[in-house]
Structure formats: structure tokens, C-alpha cells
Length: 116
Image (cartoon, rainbow, N blue to C red):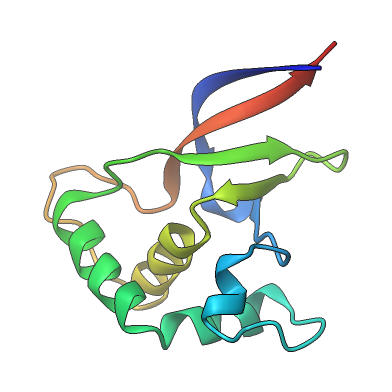
């Protein structure tokens, strides 16, 4: 099976965290079945996420995330869980980007599809 991808802008509310992300093990986040809200809360406590959040506030997302569409029309985050957590922090805190007209609710994403 081959993979095909396209770059699209996706609303942050359409994104679902990948609870099986191997990086969570390094952050000691594999604590059973967490909700997205609980997972975001734990990711936010990591110093790297705070630093990333500050960078995104200044520059926006510079490197598109990677996602895959699910059957329910939402997208699972394959690469970029921490970036999306940082965006959700900024949105929650009513922050604005230093880049004019940048909207934290819209995420540049490479959507990949499996093709046969």
C-alpha cells in the first residue's frame, strides 16, 4: 500500500490526539485511558511544550503537522501532538499570534491517505 498526502488547513477542533504516541512514554503519560483534555493537561506541564507554545505565539506553526482522516471525519494526529496541545493552550488563554492575521484555530496539516 502506498501513501499519498496533501497540505490542507484543518480546524483545531477536527483534530484528535494519538493516545498511542511513543513520545508519551518518554513523558510518562502512559497512565491508562486518558481523555484528550487530560492528555493535553499533562503535555502542557512539559517544559518543551511551554517553550514551543512561546515560539508558536511569535511565529505561528512553521512545520505542518501530519494527520490521517478517521471514519468519523475527524483527523488523528500522527506527528504534531505537542504542537496542537500548545495551540490549544494559546486558544484557551486567549492569546494572539505576533504574526498579523494568524489564526491559532487553523492548523497547516499534511493529510495522508493510504492508497492501494
